[in-house]
Amino acid sequence: MNNSVKIFALLSIALFIACNEKKEIRTTHEKPVVERNQPKEIAYKFQKTKEWLKNDGSNSKALDIVLALNRVDATNLKTLDSILVPTDTSGDIAYYMPFPLEVENLEEVKKIIIFSYATQAFATYEYGTLTHVGPTSMGRKKDKTPTGLFFTNWKAEETKSTFNDEWELKWNFNIENKLGVGFHEYALPGYPASHSCLRLLEKDAKILYEFADQWVLENDQKVKLKGTPVIVFGSYDFEGAKPWYALKEDPKALTLSEDDLEDAVSPHLQSIIKEQGKRIVGNE
Image 1 (cartoon, rainbow, N blue to C red):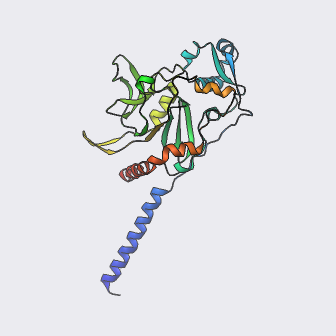
Image 2 (spheres, rainbow, N blue to C red):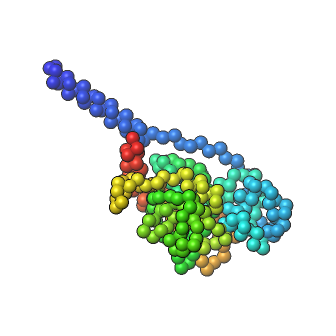
Image 3 (tube, rainbow, N blue to C red):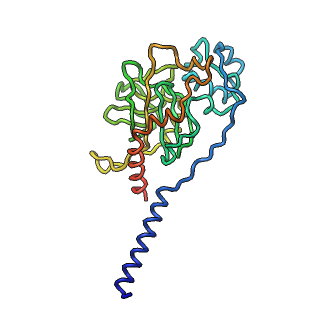
C-alpha cells in the first residue's frame, strides 16, 4: 500500500470515528428520574371554601393541589363559595392533573411545554417524562389562544402587555412575536379569561421562565435557532360547566391519555426534532 492510499485510509477511519462520535452526542441522553408519591386514592368532593381554608388552608402542599384543581390563584380562591378538593392530598400534584406520566413518542425530545385548552392545564416533558404540571387560564371566548406548534422566543422578568400597556406582565416568555402571545404570571380566576396569552401562577411562571430556552437571532430579521417547543391543543367549552367539576363523579373525567398527547404532538414531531438538532449543533 503506497503512502497516498495509507493516508486516505487513515483519513476515512478518522472521519468515520468523528461522525459516529458526533452521532452519539446527538442521540444519547439521560432520561430524568422523577420520584413520585402516589396518593392512596384519587377522589374528589365539593366543600365550602371558608371551611376548607380554616381546616386545611395552612397545609401548603394541599393548598397547591386545590389551587391547581380549581384553576385559581390564592386571591381568587377566597372569592369562591365552594371548591373542588381531593379526599386525599398526600400525593404529588401530577396525580391530580390530567397529563400522563410518560409519553413514548416524546422520548427523543429534550424538553417541551404542552398546554391543554380543554383542561386549562399545562405540562413539561423531558425525554418523554413528565417533570412539571400546573393550572392555566387561557384565552377567553372572544380572544382565544392560538393553537398549534410554537417555540419560545424572548423573555423578560417584567414587561407591559401589548394589548394594554397598563398591564404589567411578570416572568413573561413570548411564543408568538407578531401577535404578542406568551405565557406569564397573572390572575387565575378559575376559567379562561386572558386576551390570548397563557396565564400562570407565579411559581409556575418562574419555573417555565427558567425551563425554556430563548431564541438565538442571526440579525434583526432572521432567527438562527428557535427556542423550546410549545404545543397548544384542544378547545374549551365556553358554554358548559367548568370541566374539572366533573371529577367529583368521575375522577378520570379530564384524563389525557398517552394517545391523546401523541395525536397532538405527532403532526409537529418532525419539525420539533429538526429544530432541536439545529440547536444541538449550534451549541457544540
